[in-house]
Image 1 (cartoon, each protein chain N blue to C red):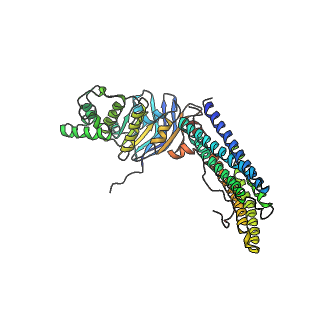
Image 2: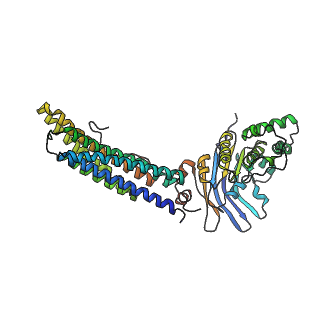
Image 3: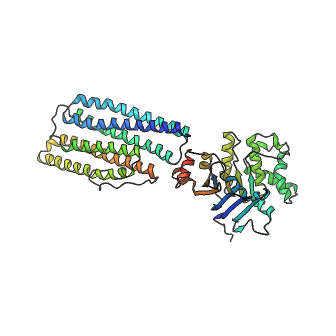
Length: 226
Length: 260
């Protein structure tokens, strides 16, 4: 086959993207888990793991650069490699959200959580699950799945709104809780952004498969959503 | 007011046969004025046959028979009474291998104009400078215009051939793999000069080099042979579309190197 080397290298890159994706997934779940348990040591580990995520992203980027320079990809190949560049950058930023959550846990020190975490772990679970499926859709170029996932963002946004209103109630009842409420609001915000970035990955998958560069409509705008 | 046709050349239902063998079948497309159109496709798909149709070079091949129309500014170049010399003046050609005449650089450039009756020495000198400047060769040869064209490097020889083609002020320039025998720097020089001169000309280039087609052309025509081994145009589009999101699976396979 004419393209054996190139095909093998593309497959290697895709495997690396899956690996990066699973590192980010674990970071998202782990960061919320350690916050829930107020496990500072585990949050410290999340920060360490983030360095590995960043390193992996640069490695893949380098691999992509070499492929673009040596194989001079066209058409579908070009869309795939250019989009993969975008996707790994989305993944790295998602890793940063997990890192942000770990930092919040560390900054809270020995202060207790304002409230037991219920919706926030659900947001993390939903986001990580969406991420996992979006990467599977990317690998398989599964158009239907890629187009369907962004609508699940509504559920994450719904949970965010719920968390937001709940935390506001605490602040209204006792303004001294404002700092602790704010921390949790930031956690929820980070998780909400994770789901947004999953949508970006799905858009890239649609682009790779069809060449159409369009936004996939998901949720309506909400307060604080950029 | 002079109107400029958006389409310099229109090809309608063009077929070319060599004896019983049909080399080109039912080609329909338009070449835009002052644009570069690339013709790509695997070996034997009829690219060069199509290119040679544009200045009736196929007339030189025994048994060749052309049907359909090639309209140059709306006029069929194969119609009865059309002056073939005039067609070849209006539609110049640059070949794969540089083929300067074994004459001086000056004589190479003035060969065409002399043929068309220009004798005045200063007129000819002016044509030489203008053509060599357009071909981005003037600065390299202005002090040795009376040396043999064959004394130049391969890349310079090819630019000399382009200057020779430009000297008769053609409207369309056909290029058949003009850089395939050249090193990368000479190739880039040819590509740069194509960009420079396309303001005044219409260029059609046949190339096997996909990156070259992607770099230089505005439009790309993709050709393939069908079951009867006749060359057909399977896709014609903006070059940007052909190389990022081609519509035909066979174009996709060809530009990504799955065959060819």
